Image (tube, rainbow, N blue to C red; front, side, top):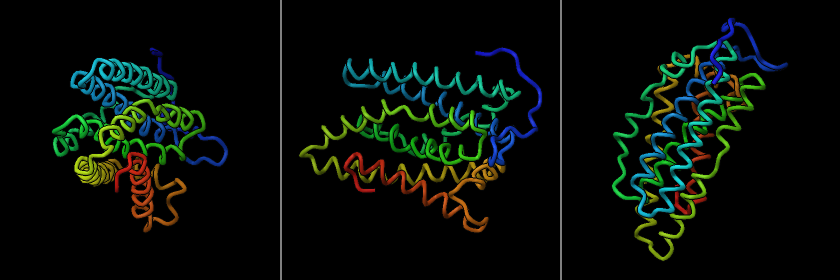
Length: 235
């Protein structure tokens, strides 16, 4: 990773037509880097719990990939003159409450939690990235564009649920709970980090300030429904 930081965290760095500031970019990049750190820990835990060697190998690769993605985001924070530890520290343990509320009891619930539950936070970051400068926006979208873990979850849940209506119904219920809890995480973030609300308020999901929350959560809910549909589950 880059070791030296540049000065100037308060100036604008957006491309033409972009109103986000450098401070805004660092704020969102700190969240993305923290989520990748969480993804590493989650994939490592899933790898240890996986029932087959093939799954353990795949999930360990996903954990390694999350480290590489995290470090790319950290490098961008440094390029913008930010302190990665401070930027990430704002969101340390951001998913702890979610994890406490959604502790999986089966392997299938664990897979669903990783794909559906944590996917909502990634969706928020994709939406909010529209306000960032071109380089930061492209990085966030690229970092969050890895579908390897999703493909594993979809394939395994589809295979397990084939002909097992009871399992499908249970997972659909679990997925709906995950979606609600994950939206709660986003709501808490927007309430505690005004900069995130400001960043997202400049995206296309918002028209007027009074409509901001409804439009954002409508978009996040639509993405959750799409993700559940890919699994053949009712949102």
